[in-house]
Amino acid sequence: MKILFTASECVPFVKTGGLADVVGALAPVLSKQGHDVRVILPMYTAIDQKYQAEMEFLLHFDVQLGWRRQYCGVQVLKKDGVTYYFLDNKYYFGRPYIYGLGGDEYERYGFFCRAALNALPLLDFQPDIIHAHDWQSGMVPALHKIQYKHLPFYANMRTMYTIHNLQYQGIFGVKEVQDVLGLGDDLFTADKLECYGCANFMKAGLVYSDVITTVSPSYAEEITTAYYGERMDGLIRARRDSLYGVLNGIDVDEYNPETDPLIFKNYTADTIEAKVENKMQLQRDLGLEVGADIPLIAMVGRLSNQKGLDLVDCVLGDIMSENVQLVVLGMGEARYTNLFSWAEQQYQGKMAARFAMDHQLAHRLYASADFFLMPSLFEPCGLSQLISLRYGTIPIVRETGGLRDTVLSYNKFNNEGNGFTFLNYNAHDMLNVIRRALGYYRDQKDIITMLRKRGMAGDYSWTHSAADYVSIYEKMLG
Ligand code: ADP
Image (cartoon, rainbow, N blue to C red):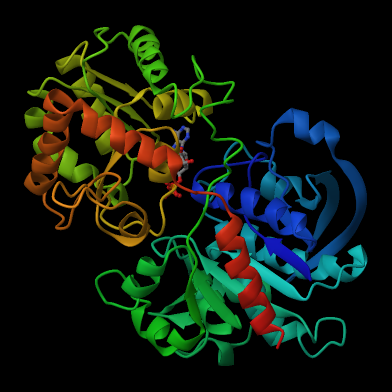
């Protein structure tokens, strides 16, 4: 099969969250299975110089965006069997940020979607499947169906649209989007592109793609309800027959405690005692009290309300009154950076917070921590809990979305489980389960070791999920 991914981020080139991990890991796995996989990405200035130096200029063309005529260069780089194309326009992507600040996101990603489709004949690549990811690519399936599908070159292409996070929809003024993409008033009705008086890129993907997927079976179920549906639940219910939940995997080579060059001391399930050396070095580096027996809880992720940080805020004093250390790594909303900066001062030697995108520290935290806390309000899949399991770090999570599909609470009666979970979005439920986990750490280390080893033995690779995607692609092609 010939498969094209369109996405706004992809490891190792550019990453702000799990979307980058998924695109960057799934593409090479599909390629290894013999498919011709190509990925179209924006050529951000933020892409590491090392990769920019490896790229080759391929061609350029002009993109008509309403009254604008914009340059689009195409740079190419081949890696692990996958061809990556980078769409280059300095005005849109030569900025010191990836998302957000300029107020013209509809134009940047409108350009991206239009240019990605226009590039295909020039690249002489006629994919069977166009697999578009998240709102930034939402206009790809829409434009394809509305403006390209009648052209012989595009006629046989099928589109898949994957929701990585329904909260971010790309909502803009109708006039602005019309101005950029040249879409008529007839398309801005409630059954097409209009959404509560606005234009919505995510909705465009949901309405016009042949198949919709999201990144875990539970989230696929949840987003059909008003609670999780982010005002798209009616539409998603209407498209239920075309909706699939495929659980994400992780790159098990990058995240491998046996070989990870970023951590202090490598270990396996058989040498799990060595894990504590990572913790003690991390404690030293972060200015925490150094002690092999002090349980360390880590949190790594975007500092947004999605991640359940309000629960942590609510009972932070209670958590810190335990014999425990807490380390937070993340970037995001000021209310949370303020909270954790304050906490670092308040609980010196017990709490550390770092507000940066720091891959090395992230790896070291996964390797060093005893527990990984992820009390999300909602979680499409979540990769951090999978990475934690792989490093023998026991997850403490709320039962929602992909967390529910991957972490099973330890049951002392039948000895099942690989972590600790709670159901209600309630701070004291979370506190109780943290105390339960700390109780095992204090009194029953054998259970903790068993859970660690069980976590490390799990299969978090892309093998199963890639096979699921392939079978859906095959179904789409009839
Ligand atoms: P989301 O996609 O909602 O942000 P996921 O759990 O699916 O959350 O994926 C987050 C990914 O980004 C994980 O690989 C996590 O380790 C990484 N990550 C998040 N914040 C940071 C950070 N500040 N520094 C390093 N890695 C981070």
